[in-house]
Image (tube, helix red, strand yellow):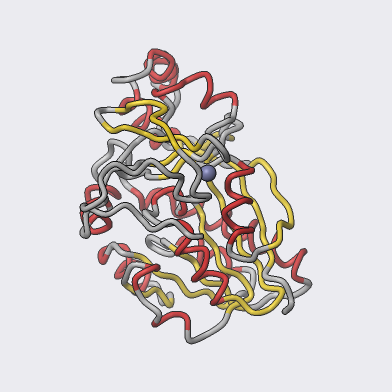
Length: 299
Ligand SMILES: [Zn+2]
C-alpha cells in the first residue's frame, strides 16, 4: 500500500510517507514539526505542502540570497562539473558503457556539463527559470518544470537518472522514484546523492544540523530508508559510499552563518572559517553526505 502525500485536508499525518508505519514527532526546527517513522526511521515534514512549494522555495533567492541556499550558485560551477564527471565514471563502471543521463533538479546544468565532458548525452530538468536559461545559453538540453508533475520527459528512456541533493527536497519521493524507474532502460542506474541523518555529525548537531532546514528540505533519509524507498518501487541496490565533496569556503561561510542562529557548534565553525579565503576549496570533512546506486532489473 502506497501512502499518499500530505494534503491540506489531512494536516495531521501520522504515518510514514515511505513505509506507511506509524510516525511520531521527533523534533521541532524553527517552528516546523518533523516526524519520524517508528519502523524505518525515516524523518519527514508532515505539514501540508502548498501547491506552489517548488516555485516559492526555488526562487532566485534560493540560488543567490544566501541563508539555507546559496550566496551565488554560479560560483559552484567548476566543483559541480568535476562532481558530474566523477559520477559519470562511477556509473559507467557499473553499467559497462556510456549513454544518456537525465539529471533531476539540474539547476544551471553544471553536473550535466560534467557528464557531457565524459561523453554522456545529458538532459536535465529544473524548476527555476533563471537557472534553466543559464544552462540553455551554454547549449545544454535543460528543460523547465517540476520533475514529478509531467510525463513529457518520460517518452525517452535513459541509461541513468541522477538525483544529486534533490530527493530530500521532494514532497513525494516515492512518486519521483517511480518516475525514474519508468524512465530507465532495463539495467539502467539510478544515482542518488543525499544526506544521512544518522551520521555522527547529524547526531552531534541535533536540530542545528544544516540539513534541518524546512521547508526547503522535506525528507531526512539514512542509508537504509533510502534503500527501502528505492526497493519499494522495484530497484535493486548496487553500491553506496560516503560522498567525497569539495566545498567552496565562501559557500560554507554563508551556510555556517545561517546555522549559527540555532547551533553553537556552527557558530564556532563560522568563526574558524573566517580565517580562510572565500575562493578557497576544501574537502568537506563530514560523514553525512553519501551516494547510492540502484539498478532497474532486467525484466
Ligand atoms: Zn517508515
